[in-house]
Image (tube, rainbow, N blue to C red; front, side, top):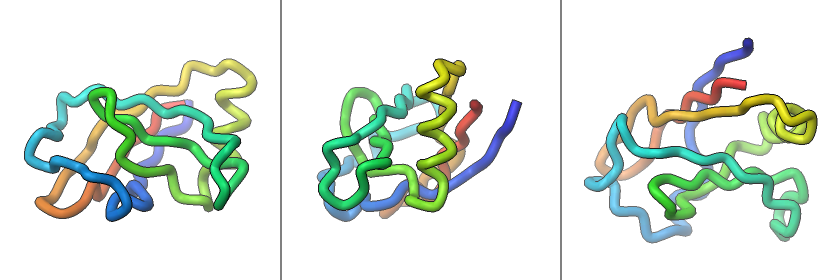
Length: 91
């Protein structure tokens, strides 16, 4: 099992209520092939709200895990008042 932490890219483009995000928030990673900036994009969805994307440098590998139907999970590792600084992905 691989494990890594990464920041969430693009949060400034979404209306994220950072005070509502906690270490217990539900995180979902969802492929975003219609993303006009990156066909390998992976949405980060927290508590049902799209808040950003996995950085481009990691999304090809994560997409491979998802396509192979590996159990890919994620959790919030840390939050600041202005950004989701870490998402821990557990492929």
